Length: 335
Ligand SMILES: Cc1cc2nc3c(=O)[nH]c(=O)nc-3n(C[C@H](O)[C@H](O)[C@H](O)COP(=O)(O)OP(=O)(O)OC[C@H]3O[C@@H](n4cnc5c(N)ncnc54)[C@H](O)[C@@H]3O)c2cc1C
Image (cartoon, rainbow, N blue to C red; front, side):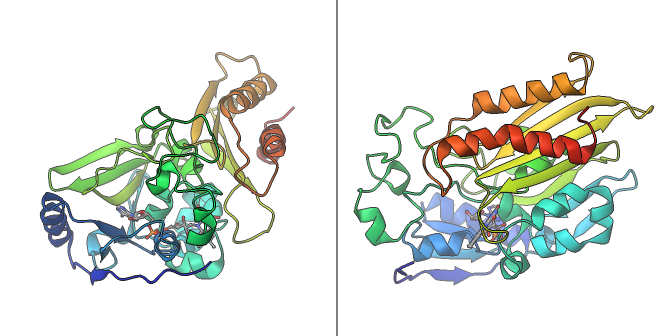
């Protein structure tokens, strides 16, 4: 990476109230700021000149964003600043949400996971081989839409204003598992607070990626009890560590009180602009194999792959069925 000179002011509010008051002020003035948690996604983009904030606001001094709380009913509230390394090794969370801890442990590398936060992972920027590059590399094909330009080197027919305008792909490793767990986001802005199911959060575009307002902060991720749900998450990568998912598949099996499979769920990352999520009920599909067939068909149908990754696009698409079936075997639902 050829590093850009980076000049920005730095602030570190020490409470949620102070943070929100500052965001109200900055937004009213139209200030170009960025919020930073672990900054493991943000800082490389600043160094590459992809993002150019004049003010960086650290979230790390805001106590309301930290910590994990357990409810009496088995629900949990995970502060947005929960570090992925802490999440991956938390004995209580491993007991209640083992797949979430496993997915967190697959992000990047151990030093990055020490800094990287769960909130930052939910909000990690979409990636494309044409934008996540040095300025010199980007200059060879002109600024793409996501970089403020008027071309898409990936989809040459794309025009400004027609969604999805940008095919930068969704890469969060934890989001597919969180979707399956029916996670709810606790969001706070100068206009107040709201709770939004993660299923309603993401948008189908690599630029306008979600519905978080510019001055809104993700405070926590709330998880209901999930004791009747078993989830398997695995990702396609060239290396065991450091690589974003070229494809990530979370498969969930829900059983009823008699131990019979009542629902199969699937969520996908690494392919497409947002994480697909589907549910297949035993009441609709005859047996586990019929549910699996439906899951493979839904994921394949939704998966428009582009050559924006190390793997050939057709290979990534073919791996969808392979990953779903391997996950089903590990969960013991394949017949
Ligand atoms: C070499 C390398 C490999 C990587 N591999 C992976 C990988 O395999 N899988 C993967 O998923 N990610 C990967 N990442 C990306 C990143 O490390 C993780 O996604 C990480 O979890 C991001 O968390 P963070 O706290 O560092 O986010 P930050 O960089 O601090 O923030 C990310 C974005 O979210 C916003 N944000 C963060 N927290 C909040 C909040 N509470 N409220 C509002 N906005 C907020 C920031 O403004 C920014 O836009 C990799 C990064 C690197 C450098």
